[in-house]
Image (cartoon, rainbow, N blue to C red; front, side):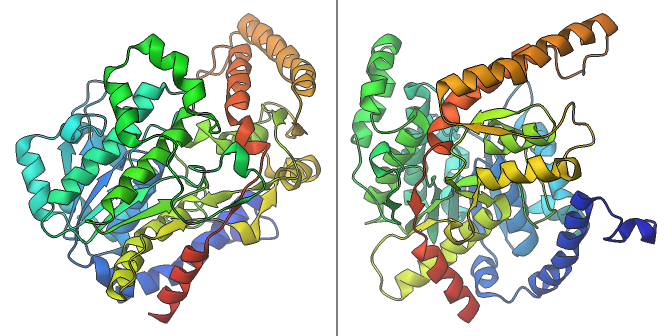
Amino acid sequence: MDPAAMDPATMDPARAIEWAAIAHQETMNEVMDRGDSAVQQFYAGASVLVTGASGFLGKQLVEKLLRSCQLKKMFILLRPKKGKTIQERLEYVLSDPLYDVLRKRKPDFMDKVVPLEGDVADIRLGLSDEDWFLLTQEVDTVFHMAATVRFDESLRASALTNVRGTRECLALARNCRQLKNFVYVSTAFSHATEERVRKPVLEQFYECPVPPAVVIGMAESMDDQRLEDITSELIKGWPNTYTFTKAIAEEVVRASSTELPVCVVRPPIVAPSFYDPTPGWMDLSSLSGPTGILAGIIMGILHVFYVDKHSKLPMTPVDFVNNATIAAAWDAAARRQRGETDTPVYTVSNKDHFITWDFIGVLMRTEGVKFSSPKAVWYCYMIEVTSNLSYTVLSFFLHYIPAYLMDTVGKLMGNMPKDITSYVAVFRKIDKFALIYRFFLANEWYFEDDNVQTMISHIVCA
């Protein structure tokens, strides 16, 4: 690269941030290569099972574990999908640029990865008897990350995947003859209910809204219409079936804590990577969350949205979340060795470094040209609203009128983007998305993270 192009004074602002992060990585890689940290030693020679490895969090966890730790083996639960075998799916997942650094530093990493056909929504995880036995004989650490994260998912689908799937994963762990830890990845919003708005959400287990066996039983036996009719009353206080079933799944984990070494990690809103393995990495699935809002702004598509601009935004980069997840297994084991009996819950919060939507909005309105994408279709800015009337009026003028004009011009000239058949359809999806996320972006909770902070202090002293 031309040295002049790397001059921070002349470099594109986004590229300057990227290069600074990459330079910072060199020091981290040197430390990582030593392999002598307490956490790395904990995983030396370990055989781990990861569910949800094809998701946003799961992909980055797989990469970080393989790159930073000397694992013996990594088992990945995958289901055939879209006509692809699990081996083809694994190859597709690992073709992501996320793994480029890993391929360069450990070109033989695939030798340690073993894909197994299964589905967390099925009894016994959909595993064959042979694969079930294999896992019970070899696995010592389980990372259960698989979940349906659709906020508008039916209660049946959410319960079977998020609740029963956790029960089945714990059943497998119960049969693992050398289990050291079962790490359940939940969400910081599992108990961020209406009654707790602007109140603390502690790193503890809360009272379960409905017994897990009852929810599983209803999902397994009740007809669709009846289940749909009672859903809104059943999940009252929770904004959707996702957070509701994640709260119940935590109870399944808590109930197993008397016989199994378990811990819970609660991520907040997960953002693209900050440093690791490359700054700014994100999975396409993350566009369905608040990251998609930011992407819509810098693309000049999204100009008005439901957010309380003064609320603190609980957003943490994916690499920070997975660093905490990997360390949690080590810390939970260390706690047990010290004689602690409470099951630890780790909330990955950024409460001391919050940003607000107002900060983002002001930044885009004043520095939008600097941070906008080169492929932006219009000016980059966002107006924050909290009322239905404001959203309806502003979105009509700022979204739909331009959308109809762009659709008309695009069809007449035949130059519509290949991934967009209609801008109007895009904004209809945005409207649906706005309603789904309004509860989270127009409210605020105080997520306590004492266990994570204590864990960090232990790592520093180890």
